[in-house]
Image 1 (cartoon, rainbow, N blue to C red):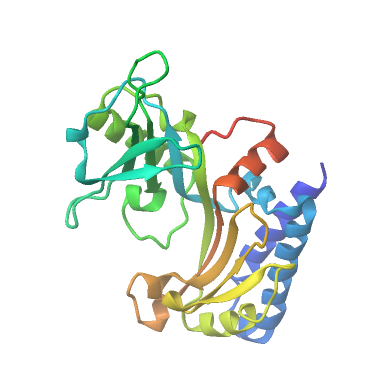
Image 2 (tube, one colour):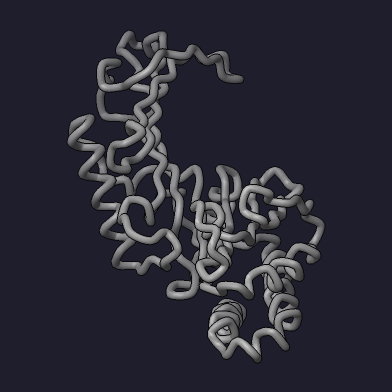
Length: 278
């Protein structure tokens, strides 16, 4: 009801604050950071998850996706590169894990993993196993990874994944219909030399009972949920992660990573749908 529009207005307000004059930002940096952390705390308490962020179209963008499907037919080992690893799951099912990753200097492509059952099904037919695709939407689209992606661009990226999968493995349902195992949402703000001041405040904040850790790779901070739902929240310097050391390029990145159980929780709790990508 009224809570979701309120959250949307709150994040849009945060966007607007970060676009104000440099002098105003320096004077109000602590206030802005405290406001956004209060909003995050409220979202954590509301429904005991950050799932509300999924619905905030135009405020937060879809970033990284991992999804899985049972192929319509057995896939040939020749379609994959590298060796084969045998894995035994808790159900005592024995599988062979294969993978297909893009070459180092090749154009970006989804990372594919295939779990093929070693034994046949009870009726004697070969088990087709499971195929997983993991990809970054901004990387698929190319260009500056610090830009914010639109909904139309997300659709274009999903079409690119479909094209890659079908050209590599033959016909498959659209990745939109695959079961989601990881969904990341993010947003970027170009702050330049002001970013360290914001980060120094953010790094001291807490989200509910979540554990807080430094994100050293990009001078940031990450909060991890203590439950089994598997959700991480990060603020960090996206420019440093990309190897850009000029302070004028500094970009504050806000990121929410939802892993398997968290994705399932969001789908059933908030949307009453199956755990599909789109």
